Length: 367
Image (cartoon, rainbow, N blue to C red; front, side, top):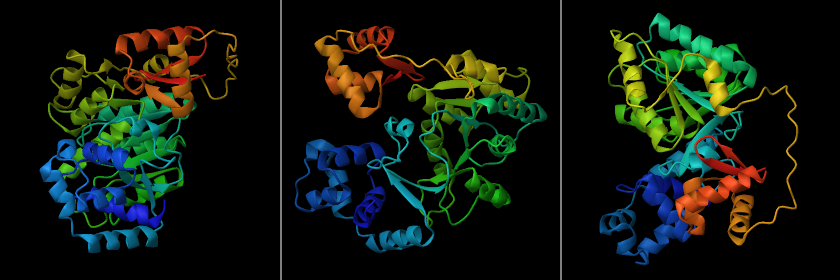
Protein backbone atom coordinates (compact mmCIF):
# COMPACT_ATOMS: atom_id res chain seq x y z
CA UNK A 1 0.00 0.00 0.00
CA UNK A 2 1.29 3.44 -0.89
CA UNK A 3 2.17 5.51 2.18
CA UNK A 4 -0.13 8.37 1.13
CA UNK A 5 -3.06 5.93 0.92
CA UNK A 6 -2.25 4.52 4.34
CA UNK A 7 -1.89 8.03 5.78
CA UNK A 8 -5.43 9.02 4.82
CA UNK A 9 -6.92 5.62 5.70
CA UNK A 10 -5.46 5.98 9.18
CA UNK A 11 -7.03 9.42 9.44
CA UNK A 12 -10.44 8.19 8.24
CA UNK A 13 -10.24 5.37 10.78
CA UNK A 14 -10.03 7.94 13.59
CA UNK A 15 -12.69 10.43 12.43
CA UNK A 16 -15.34 10.65 15.13
CA UNK A 17 -18.89 9.56 14.23
CA UNK A 18 -17.65 7.57 11.20
CA UNK A 19 -17.99 3.82 11.63
CA UNK A 20 -16.76 1.12 9.29
CA UNK A 21 -20.05 0.83 7.40
CA UNK A 22 -20.17 4.57 6.65
CA UNK A 23 -16.45 4.63 5.87
CA UNK A 24 -16.86 1.80 3.34
CA UNK A 25 -19.73 3.65 1.71
CA UNK A 26 -17.56 6.74 1.33
CA UNK A 27 -14.58 4.76 0.04
CA UNK A 28 -16.71 2.97 -2.54
CA UNK A 29 -18.13 6.29 -3.74
CA UNK A 30 -14.96 8.39 -3.82
CA UNK A 31 -12.38 5.67 -4.47
CA UNK A 32 -9.86 6.59 -1.76
CA UNK A 33 -9.63 8.03 1.74
CA UNK A 34 -7.75 11.05 0.44
CA UNK A 35 -10.58 11.76 -1.98
CA UNK A 36 -13.06 11.60 0.92
CA UNK A 37 -11.21 14.33 2.83
CA UNK A 38 -10.83 16.44 -0.31
CA UNK A 39 -14.55 16.08 -1.11
CA UNK A 40 -15.52 17.14 2.42
CA UNK A 41 -13.22 20.14 2.24
CA UNK A 42 -14.71 21.24 -1.10
CA UNK A 43 -18.31 20.49 0.03
CA UNK A 44 -18.72 17.71 -2.53
CA UNK A 45 -20.22 15.20 -0.09
CA UNK A 46 -24.01 15.09 -0.12
CA UNK A 47 -25.79 15.50 3.20
CA UNK A 48 -28.24 12.88 1.98
CA UNK A 49 -25.39 10.40 1.68
CA UNK A 50 -23.97 10.47 5.22
CA UNK A 51 -25.52 13.40 7.12
CA UNK A 52 -24.29 16.72 8.44
CA UNK A 53 -22.70 15.34 11.61
CA UNK A 54 -20.41 12.99 9.68
CA UNK A 55 -19.48 15.61 7.10
CA UNK A 56 -18.57 18.08 9.84
CA UNK A 57 -16.55 15.37 11.62
CA UNK A 58 -14.46 14.78 8.49
CA UNK A 59 -13.98 18.51 7.93
CA UNK A 60 -13.07 19.05 11.56
CA UNK A 61 -10.51 16.24 11.81
CA UNK A 62 -7.23 17.76 12.99
CA UNK A 63 -5.35 14.89 14.63
CA UNK A 64 -2.82 14.65 11.81
CA UNK A 65 0.17 14.53 14.15
CA UNK A 66 -1.18 11.37 15.73
CA UNK A 67 -1.59 9.91 12.23
CA UNK A 68 2.07 10.70 11.51
CA UNK A 69 3.10 9.02 14.76
CA UNK A 70 1.16 5.85 13.99
CA UNK A 71 2.48 5.72 10.44
CA UNK A 72 6.04 5.93 11.78
CA UNK A 73 5.31 3.19 14.32
CA UNK A 74 3.97 0.89 11.58
CA UNK A 75 7.07 1.45 9.46
CA UNK A 76 9.53 1.10 12.33
CA UNK A 77 8.06 -2.19 13.58
CA UNK A 78 7.49 -3.71 10.13
CA UNK A 79 3.76 -4.11 10.65
CA UNK A 80 1.64 -5.10 7.69
CA UNK A 81 -1.25 -2.65 7.24
CA UNK A 82 -4.09 -4.31 5.30
CA UNK A 83 -6.96 -2.27 3.84
CA UNK A 84 -10.12 -3.29 2.02
CA UNK A 85 -8.37 -2.29 -1.21
CA UNK A 86 -5.64 -4.92 -0.76
CA UNK A 87 -5.66 -8.43 -2.22
CA UNK A 88 -4.39 -9.67 1.15
CA UNK A 89 -7.59 -8.50 2.86
CA UNK A 90 -9.40 -11.69 3.98
CA UNK A 91 -12.37 -12.42 1.74
CA UNK A 92 -14.41 -13.81 4.63
CA UNK A 93 -13.92 -10.58 6.57
CA UNK A 94 -14.57 -8.52 3.44
CA UNK A 95 -18.08 -9.98 3.33
CA UNK A 96 -18.76 -8.77 6.89
CA UNK A 97 -20.61 -5.43 6.49
CA UNK A 98 -18.91 -3.84 9.50
CA UNK A 99 -15.46 -5.35 8.98
CA UNK A 100 -12.64 -2.83 9.50
CA UNK A 101 -11.52 -0.67 6.58
CA UNK A 102 -7.97 -1.17 7.84
CA UNK A 103 -6.23 -3.56 10.21
CA UNK A 104 -2.68 -4.44 11.21
CA UNK A 105 -1.05 -7.84 11.01
CA UNK A 106 2.10 -9.61 12.11
CA UNK A 107 2.65 -13.22 11.18
CA UNK A 108 3.25 -15.70 8.40
CA UNK A 109 -0.15 -17.23 7.67
CA UNK A 110 -2.45 -16.51 4.73
CA UNK A 111 -5.52 -14.81 6.18
CA UNK A 112 -7.42 -16.12 3.17
CA UNK A 113 -6.75 -19.73 4.16
CA UNK A 114 -9.42 -22.11 2.96
CA UNK A 115 -10.34 -23.44 6.42
CA UNK A 116 -10.57 -21.08 9.37
CA UNK A 117 -12.38 -21.84 12.62
CA UNK A 118 -12.90 -19.52 15.60
CA UNK A 119 -12.91 -21.09 19.06
CA UNK A 120 -13.97 -18.83 21.93
CA UNK A 121 -15.46 -19.05 25.39
CA UNK A 122 -15.30 -18.05 29.01
CA UNK A 123 -12.15 -16.80 30.73
CA UNK A 124 -13.15 -19.02 33.68
CA UNK A 125 -12.71 -22.30 31.86
CA UNK A 126 -13.46 -25.52 33.70
CA UNK A 127 -11.70 -28.89 33.40
CA UNK A 128 -14.57 -29.97 31.13
CA UNK A 129 -14.04 -26.96 28.88
CA UNK A 130 -10.30 -27.56 28.68
CA UNK A 131 -10.88 -31.19 27.70
CA UNK A 132 -13.37 -30.21 24.98
CA UNK A 133 -10.97 -27.66 23.46
CA UNK A 134 -8.26 -30.34 23.31
CA UNK A 135 -10.54 -33.01 21.85
CA UNK A 136 -12.04 -30.75 19.19
CA UNK A 137 -8.71 -29.37 17.97
CA UNK A 138 -7.14 -32.83 17.99
CA UNK A 139 -10.03 -34.03 15.82
CA UNK A 140 -9.72 -31.10 13.43
CA UNK A 141 -5.91 -31.27 13.20
CA UNK A 142 -5.70 -33.69 10.23
CA UNK A 143 -7.68 -31.16 8.15
CA UNK A 144 -5.17 -28.35 8.83
CA UNK A 145 -7.53 -25.47 9.70
CA UNK A 146 -6.37 -22.09 10.98
CA UNK A 147 -7.57 -21.63 14.57
CA UNK A 148 -8.72 -18.08 15.41
CA UNK A 149 -9.32 -16.72 18.92
CA UNK A 150 -8.76 -13.67 21.10
CA UNK A 151 -5.64 -14.56 23.15
CA UNK A 152 -7.60 -13.97 26.37
CA UNK A 153 -7.54 -16.07 29.53
CA UNK A 154 -9.40 -19.36 29.53
CA UNK A 155 -10.80 -20.91 26.36
CA UNK A 156 -9.07 -18.46 24.00
CA UNK A 157 -5.50 -19.14 25.02
CA UNK A 158 -6.23 -22.86 25.40
CA UNK A 159 -7.36 -22.89 21.75
CA UNK A 160 -4.11 -21.21 20.68
CA UNK A 161 -1.98 -23.58 22.74
CA UNK A 162 -3.68 -26.68 21.35
CA UNK A 163 -3.32 -25.35 17.81
CA UNK A 164 0.41 -24.90 18.38
CA UNK A 165 0.59 -28.39 19.87
CA UNK A 166 -0.75 -29.88 16.63
CA UNK A 167 1.27 -27.50 14.43
CA UNK A 168 -1.83 -25.70 13.22
CA UNK A 169 -1.58 -22.01 12.30
CA UNK A 170 -3.36 -19.87 14.88
CA UNK A 171 -4.44 -16.23 14.72
CA UNK A 172 -4.93 -14.05 17.80
CA UNK A 173 -7.19 -11.01 17.44
CA UNK A 174 -6.23 -8.29 19.91
CA UNK A 175 -8.41 -5.69 21.60
CA UNK A 176 -5.49 -3.25 21.68
CA UNK A 177 -2.45 -2.19 19.65
CA UNK A 178 0.88 -3.92 19.11
CA UNK A 179 2.71 -2.02 21.84
CA UNK A 180 1.63 -4.65 24.39
CA UNK A 181 0.12 -8.08 24.80
CA UNK A 182 -2.76 -8.26 27.25
CA UNK A 183 -2.71 -10.21 29.43
CA UNK A 184 1.07 -9.91 29.59
CA UNK A 185 1.40 -13.53 30.72
CA UNK A 186 0.48 -14.54 27.14
CA UNK A 187 3.34 -12.62 25.53
CA UNK A 188 5.51 -15.71 24.97
CA UNK A 189 2.56 -17.57 23.46
CA UNK A 190 1.96 -14.64 21.10
CA UNK A 191 5.61 -14.76 20.03
CA UNK A 192 5.25 -18.45 19.21
CA UNK A 193 2.15 -17.68 17.18
CA UNK A 194 4.12 -15.30 14.97
CA UNK A 195 6.07 -18.32 13.69
CA UNK A 196 2.92 -20.27 12.85
CA UNK A 197 -0.04 -17.96 12.53
CA UNK A 198 -0.02 -14.37 13.63
CA UNK A 199 -1.59 -11.47 15.46
CA UNK A 200 -4.28 -9.15 14.10
CA UNK A 201 -5.61 -5.86 15.46
CA UNK A 202 -7.45 -2.82 14.18
CA UNK A 203 -6.23 -0.70 17.11
CA UNK A 204 -3.33 1.75 17.13
CA UNK A 205 -0.37 1.36 19.44
CA UNK A 206 -1.56 4.45 21.36
CA UNK A 207 -5.08 3.06 21.96
CA UNK A 208 -5.77 2.20 25.58
CA UNK A 209 -6.82 -1.22 26.82
CA UNK A 210 -10.59 -0.85 27.11
CA UNK A 211 -13.43 -3.35 27.62
CA UNK A 212 -15.37 -1.99 24.64
CA UNK A 213 -12.37 -2.59 22.40
CA UNK A 214 -12.40 -6.27 23.32
CA UNK A 215 -16.09 -6.49 22.43
CA UNK A 216 -15.42 -4.66 19.16
CA UNK A 217 -12.66 -7.06 18.15
CA UNK A 218 -15.13 -9.96 18.38
CA UNK A 219 -16.53 -9.08 14.95
CA UNK A 220 -13.07 -9.72 13.47
CA UNK A 221 -12.86 -13.08 15.26
CA UNK A 222 -16.22 -14.06 13.75
CA UNK A 223 -15.56 -12.40 10.41
CA UNK A 224 -12.26 -14.17 9.69
CA UNK A 225 -13.79 -17.61 10.10
CA UNK A 226 -16.02 -20.08 8.34
CA UNK A 227 -17.58 -20.97 11.67
CA UNK A 228 -17.44 -20.11 15.36
CA UNK A 229 -17.38 -22.60 18.23
CA UNK A 230 -18.41 -21.61 21.75
CA UNK A 231 -16.85 -24.02 24.24
CA UNK A 232 -18.14 -22.63 27.55
CA UNK A 233 -19.94 -19.41 28.45
CA UNK A 234 -21.88 -17.99 31.32
CA UNK A 235 -25.34 -16.49 30.84
CA UNK A 236 -23.58 -13.31 29.68
CA UNK A 237 -20.20 -12.83 28.09
CA UNK A 238 -18.16 -11.75 25.11
CA UNK A 239 -18.32 -15.16 23.46
CA UNK A 240 -22.11 -14.83 23.21
CA UNK A 241 -21.57 -11.50 21.45
CA UNK A 242 -19.24 -13.30 19.03
CA UNK A 243 -21.92 -15.94 18.41
CA UNK A 244 -24.51 -13.26 17.63
CA UNK A 245 -22.11 -11.54 15.24
CA UNK A 246 -21.28 -14.81 13.47
CA UNK A 247 -25.00 -15.49 13.07
CA UNK A 248 -25.48 -12.01 11.58
CA UNK A 249 -22.78 -12.88 9.01
CA UNK A 250 -24.61 -16.12 8.11
CA UNK A 251 -21.70 -18.18 9.42
CA UNK A 252 -22.11 -21.50 11.17
CA UNK A 253 -22.15 -21.37 14.97
CA UNK A 254 -21.69 -24.37 17.27
CA UNK A 255 -21.90 -24.60 21.05
CA UNK A 256 -20.71 -27.36 23.36
CA UNK A 257 -23.56 -28.32 25.73
CA UNK A 258 -23.19 -28.83 29.46
CA UNK A 259 -25.23 -29.73 32.54
CA UNK A 260 -28.05 -27.28 33.19
CA UNK A 261 -26.72 -26.52 36.68
CA UNK A 262 -23.23 -25.58 35.47
CA UNK A 263 -22.65 -21.82 35.47
CA UNK A 264 -20.31 -21.83 32.48
CA UNK A 265 -22.55 -24.00 30.34
CA UNK A 266 -25.60 -21.73 30.70
CA UNK A 267 -24.68 -19.55 27.73
CA UNK A 268 -24.00 -22.51 25.44
CA UNK A 269 -27.16 -24.30 26.46
CA UNK A 270 -29.19 -21.16 25.81
CA UNK A 271 -27.65 -20.68 22.36
CA UNK A 272 -28.64 -24.24 21.47
CA UNK A 273 -32.10 -23.81 22.99
CA UNK A 274 -32.75 -20.67 20.95
CA UNK A 275 -31.41 -22.27 17.73
CA UNK A 276 -28.59 -19.72 17.63
CA UNK A 277 -26.03 -22.51 17.63
CA UNK A 278 -25.90 -26.14 16.60
CA UNK A 279 -25.11 -28.67 19.30
CA UNK A 280 -21.46 -29.76 19.13
CA UNK A 281 -20.14 -32.88 20.82
CA UNK A 282 -17.16 -33.84 18.65
CA UNK A 283 -14.93 -32.51 15.89
CA UNK A 284 -16.54 -34.83 13.35
CA UNK A 285 -19.74 -32.75 13.59
CA UNK A 286 -17.83 -29.80 12.11
CA UNK A 287 -16.09 -31.90 9.48
CA UNK A 288 -19.40 -33.38 8.31
CA UNK A 289 -21.31 -30.10 8.12
CA UNK A 290 -18.50 -28.19 6.38
CA UNK A 291 -17.87 -31.21 4.11
CA UNK A 292 -14.13 -31.20 4.66
CA UNK A 293 -11.94 -33.78 3.00
CA UNK A 294 -8.52 -34.82 4.20
CA UNK A 295 -5.70 -32.81 2.63
CA UNK A 296 -3.96 -36.06 1.76
CA UNK A 297 -6.94 -37.33 -0.18
CA UNK A 298 -6.89 -36.62 -3.86
CA UNK A 299 -10.41 -35.85 -4.84
CA UNK A 300 -11.52 -36.44 -8.39
CA UNK A 301 -11.27 -33.15 -10.24
CA UNK A 302 -14.61 -31.71 -11.19
CA UNK A 303 -14.75 -31.32 -14.95
CA UNK A 304 -16.40 -28.05 -15.84
CA UNK A 305 -19.16 -28.73 -18.32
CA UNK A 306 -18.22 -26.33 -21.08
CA UNK A 307 -21.21 -27.37 -23.14
CA UNK A 308 -23.91 -26.22 -20.72
CA UNK A 309 -26.11 -23.65 -22.39
CA UNK A 310 -26.40 -20.72 -20.00
CA UNK A 311 -29.34 -18.40 -19.95
CA UNK A 312 -28.58 -14.67 -20.05
CA UNK A 313 -29.14 -14.47 -16.29
CA UNK A 314 -26.92 -17.48 -15.56
CA UNK A 315 -24.21 -15.97 -17.76
CA UNK A 316 -24.40 -12.76 -15.73
CA UNK A 317 -23.89 -14.75 -12.52
CA UNK A 318 -21.03 -16.71 -14.12
CA UNK A 319 -19.28 -13.52 -15.26
CA UNK A 320 -19.78 -11.87 -11.88
CA UNK A 321 -18.31 -14.81 -9.94
CA UNK A 322 -15.44 -14.98 -12.42
CA UNK A 323 -14.68 -11.34 -11.62
CA UNK A 324 -15.26 -11.40 -7.84
CA UNK A 325 -14.09 -14.90 -6.92
CA UNK A 326 -16.60 -15.58 -4.12
CA UNK A 327 -19.90 -13.91 -3.31
CA UNK A 328 -22.78 -14.57 -0.96
CA UNK A 329 -26.29 -15.17 -2.24
CA UNK A 330 -27.35 -11.71 -1.05
CA UNK A 331 -24.35 -9.98 -2.64
CA UNK A 332 -24.94 -11.73 -5.97
CA UNK A 333 -28.56 -10.61 -5.96
CA UNK A 334 -27.60 -7.03 -5.10
CA UNK A 335 -24.87 -6.79 -7.73
CA UNK A 336 -27.21 -8.05 -10.48
CA UNK A 337 -30.41 -6.50 -9.15
CA UNK A 338 -32.10 -9.92 -9.12
CA UNK A 339 -34.68 -11.03 -6.52
CA UNK A 340 -33.14 -13.23 -3.80
CA UNK A 341 -35.45 -16.17 -4.56
CA UNK A 342 -34.65 -16.06 -8.27
CA UNK A 343 -30.91 -15.79 -7.60
CA UNK A 344 -31.08 -18.83 -5.31
CA UNK A 345 -32.84 -20.86 -8.02
CA UNK A 346 -30.29 -19.86 -10.66
CA UNK A 347 -27.34 -20.70 -8.39
CA UNK A 348 -28.87 -24.06 -7.50
CA UNK A 349 -29.29 -24.93 -11.17
CA UNK A 350 -25.71 -23.87 -11.89
CA UNK A 351 -24.48 -25.95 -8.96
CA UNK A 352 -26.31 -29.02 -10.24
CA UNK A 353 -24.73 -28.44 -13.66
CA UNK A 354 -21.26 -28.41 -12.10
CA UNK A 355 -20.60 -24.71 -12.72
CA UNK A 356 -20.58 -23.31 -9.18
CA UNK A 357 -19.88 -24.62 -5.70
CA UNK A 358 -21.89 -23.65 -2.64
CA UNK A 359 -19.81 -22.97 0.48
CA UNK A 360 -20.64 -22.43 4.15
CA UNK A 361 -22.61 -19.26 4.87
CA UNK A 362 -24.42 -19.23 1.48
CA UNK A 363 -21.18 -18.26 -0.29
CA UNK A 364 -20.70 -19.33 -3.92
CA UNK A 365 -17.71 -19.63 -6.24
CA UNK A 366 -17.02 -21.06 -9.69
CA UNK A 367 -15.72 -24.59 -9.94
